[in-house]
Length: 101
Image (cartoon, rainbow, N blue to C red):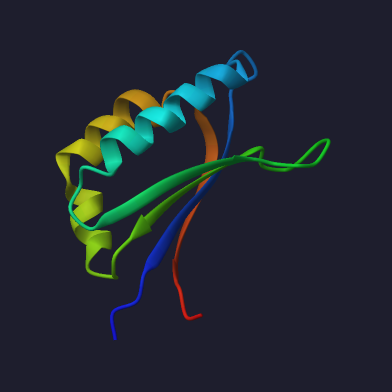
């Protein structure tokens, strides 16, 4: 059975990056990444804790597991990651979760 996959990325930014820049990056992520076939949505969150280990969360929703590979290899993802995400992100952790409920 093909179930939705949530691609989670937790990350921090360099100290000189204002939070507003991170919000702009997340808006751009939604605009660009949802144009990739099989990407159902993009969400962004900020940790609700005084000194979190990871401040930001980016969630990309895939229609099913087969989208993982096509997303990773898609030129829109590569361009976004290289020019928008990676210049801001510090120590990102990425994990894919198959949704069961």
